[in-house]
Each structure stands twice: as C-alpha cells, then as structure tokens.
Length: 362
Image (cartoon, rainbow, N blue to C red; front, side):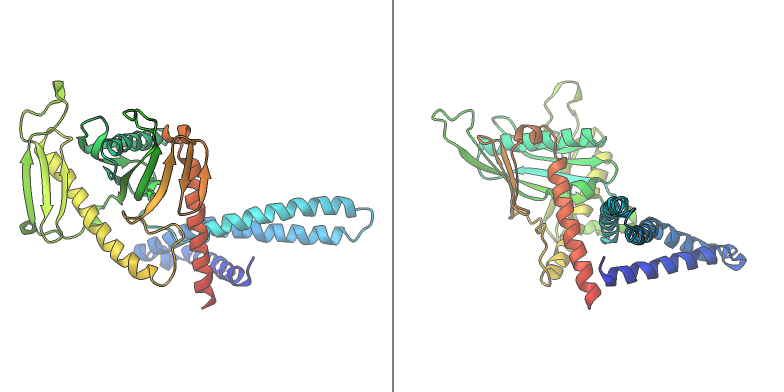
C-alpha cells in the first residue's frame, strides 16, 4: 500500500475513534443537529475503517508468520501461512481502493433511457428494438422496473425512438456508461445477396432528478402541446388528447410522454424528463471543462462517440472505450450485460483511483 494512502487511512481511523468518543458525550447527545451530523460522518466512514482495521490485523499476522519462519522446524508451515496472508492482504487492499474511489452522487438514482435509430434506415430501427429488448431483459434480471414513456415505431418493425424510465436500486450506477453511439454489423433479413450492413443507434442515459435538485424552469419558457397517443389500439387506445409534448424554448429541448391515460400524469412525467435533460446538459458542460485537465478512460458519453460494435456474423461485441471484446453476443442481446458493465465499472474505478492518487501527491 502506498505510504500516502496508508497515512490518509490512519487519519480517517483516528477521526472515526474521535467521533465515537464525541457521540458518548452528554453535550453532543443533547445537541440534536450536532449529533445527527456526527452520526452521519461516523456511518460514512464505517466500511472503510472496518477494512483498514482488517488490513492492520492481517499485517500483524504477517509479521508474526515472518518471526515464526526463523525457526527451522516451523519455516515450511510459516511460509505457507505467509503466502495465504499475502493473498488476503491483496484482496483487502483492493477492497480499500474501491471504497476510496469518490462516489458518484447520482449512482442511486433511477434513470431515463432513450434509444434512437441512427444511420441505416429500417435496419437501424430494428436494431433500436433489439437494444430496447436487451436493456429491458437486463432490467428484469436486476429486479428493476421499466416504464415506457414514449415510443415511435418504424415502418418495418423496431422503433424510430423509444424512451423509458428504469426504476430500481442503483440503476444509474450500472447503466451510466451506456450513453453513446452503438453500431451493429449484420446481414438484414431483406438482404438477398447476404451482404453485411452497418447501422447505428444512439443511447442516452439521464439520472432522474429529485425535487430538491430540480432545475428552475419558468412556465413562460414552455410550449405545451397535447395530442392523441399513437398506441397500437385495442382496449388501451387513448380516446382523448392525453399525450403531452413540452418544448423548452430557451434551449430547444423537446420531451413527450404518451404512456398514461391521464394528461396530468403525462405532463408530470414529461416535466421530470425535461428537468433531467436540462440538468444533464449543464453537467455535460461542466464535465467538458474538467476533462480538459485529465483524460477520462471511460469516454465522454457524448452521442457522437462510437462506444460499441455488435458484430452478429462473428457473434462478437467490442467496447471501444476499454478495448474489450467478447464472443457471446447472443447472451448479451438476451440481457446478459453484467460482464460488459462490470468491466466498465472496474476501468472507471481504476481511473478514479488514479485521479485520487494524483491529487494526493499535490
């Protein structure tokens, strides 16, 4: 472990013990604001302190094993024990590093997921439908719930655009790296000569905005249109103009929702999506400033950036941001996204830890 990290952890441990002593003092207990503040700080440090204490204990056991190895009769036993303790120490260090990575305050949030057909005509729309099913199945496997807010079908199957809200535990933490251009290479069903076509879709992921973080939107800056839903008909068809489209005039941002039968509910959902989009735009501007000082290994998430290629003839998926290639495309399209997402998370954590170490050196 780096000396700088060890010193930082030592200070955190000392502060944790100091807070424990403060929480036992009557004057702190009687001051509810102070007590809540300290309790929150104590809880936030608990996991890291627990891992560091295990690290220190394991370090003591390693030292004891080294002492035992000086005895010729016990040397072999001590060396075996030392080997196991070294492996354990490496695992604890990895766990500590993961805990040191700065937490994204949006990781716990629900998301809005947008998928739009790009270049490639009808095939792009079909691929948009494939991506939507992939994410829907992944969400189901995670125990999340997906609510379709807006959907526009393409002429030959698939979608020109689909927007949904994904609700569940830590959704943004798992799907925040999906924003960007997704490229597909395959032979369309309509291709008589068996030629491989290349099509694209854009995916955008926005964390849902909570009320305490909502952006201020002036009602005079909004243009609200209502229209009849373009549903498939049957018992769920809307017979009133309940679908809502909202245009934010200063930014030109347009959102719509046609999922609910109630115009009031559709307007509320559309406003929530509008807030998320505008806030995401502001965050993107800030991110660009920060990225000027250091390179982000995961990529910008900009819509113009090709992040992934799905090659069906070779059953191959390539994530270009981390040079990851896997040959299990059928499973991935069926919702088995964890191998890809976990690889992206590991790269992200490594990048964040590198930034943490760089800052620590200053």
